[in-house]
Image 1: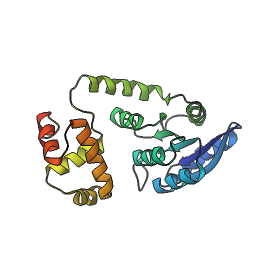
Image 2 (image 1 turned 135 degrees about the horizontal axis):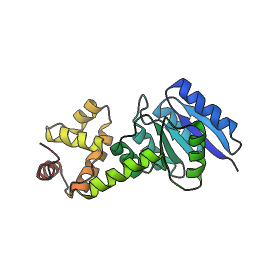
Image 3 (image 1 turned 180 degrees about the vertical axis):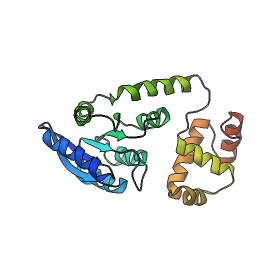
Image 4 (image 1 turned 60 degrees about the horizontal axis):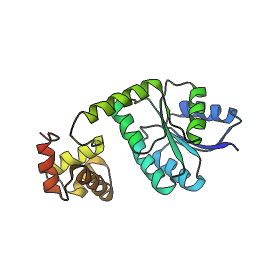
Amino acid sequence: MRVRVVIADDHPVYREGLVRAVRERPDLELVGEAATGREAIALIRELRPDVAVLDMKLPDLDGRQVLGAAKTDWPATRVVFVSAYVDSELVYAAVGGGASGYLSKDATRQQICDAIVRVARGNPALAPSVHDGLMREIQLRSESDAPALSPREQEVLELTADGLSAPQIGRRLYLSPATVKSHLQHVYGKLGVSDRAAAVAEAMRRGLLE
């Protein structure tokens, strides 16, 4: 049985290269391709692929937002990021959010296709450089008592500390108020608090806010 694949990347030439590589593999079946995050989410909901191959930086949505929607709508779809952005914090957030694989765009088409097959079988797929960076990030975070806030959670926390409401933060970050409130709930959980004022006070105590 072939692995059913959806590809989302807004660079037409790069996406076409991936599409061609997948179509040439007898063990893979391309079922959809997208240029935006919203298109990717719609395809995952409709087609329920085995694996979704995503760029981290899509025009309308952050790759992690697509990952979150995929995990909510159809958890059986495994996600592999193929991105030009491979800094350790970003990889940590992606893997922590449920990504099964993370590769650099420097990877060959064969390496990407092999990674798709690997994650479809339930195994992780990380490029060596990505793996090393992830291990360093884990070590750094284990050495600190500060909670591991994602970059987006940190942004929401800082704007909350500035006194902005959820709708105001949403407009600033191009997020819905519901998404902002979701990020705040995650921050509350990581800080062990239950409201905005306590979150700001605890974040200052831990050195997360200046």
